[in-house]
Image (cartoon, rainbow, N blue to C red):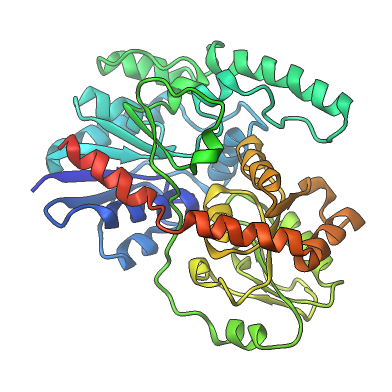
Length: 406
């Protein structure tokens, strides 16, 4: 029996659930162990039946918000001090040895990219294609600029070229990742792309999402991976699904913010629909939301097909893939280039409409929701995408690749 150590960022919902799905797909001949620093979604790991080991130092809520802003390209400030990086690498190396881990699977837990290599253990990264090095090097447009006209496309192409150099060439990785890597006998991580490039990068995409791209060594497609939260569907969802009004699912993952959640709920409140919204983690209490918006905790979104008529999503790959696999047309509002990429590809496929998050609450946003509810072409495209997803299992493919290296 070999042990695989899973190291997600445990305040990132999509990343945590992606790791859970891969761990579930491992052969029972192997053992999956999770480790992390923050406790936001640790219950999901334990509820799935896996051992979880908590380590320090953990980031504060303010530091987590700063990391989300860093991930979304809104700031270069980050909480990765020399002390934090050094302590995390040391504790991860110790844990790899203590558990006898034969492989490490990670997401954006950046210190894994030092600790696994320092211990000589293969590092696997199930990851969306957007913002990987081959995507940034080859894409003409990364959707960094809002707008759809010729001038916007020209501006985006120029911005993409500048971003390509910044991402793949400029030494903008936080300095501790270079110094701590060298101190641990690992080549220094100096560029942003080097921070999140593993030994085996497992692309969680459908075939058409990689058309026109060439994958270098170390990259391979495995297919979609999205959350399967084992929880009952609340009675309110089934009650609203049986009502005469259409039912809209509002999901903003863990990378949105309170203002966006409230703005989206208020806009949906103007429509003759019912809304089921797992956005309680963004609300502080006392907000006055429209009476047709029903706030819940996290839902088993993979089981909402046939119950909801449309969705409004933040564009994270997990929520997007869940909608695609469930045949649910959606309005997507990417909060960062990776998320915008996911939504725009679905828009090109015909099962979604992309709207800038800056336009939430505008007539454009409301009209987009109306259209995904009523346009038969969008609904037909959603059904076609759902059929294409049938049988696709990126978690199982990832598990088999990891197992071949054990």
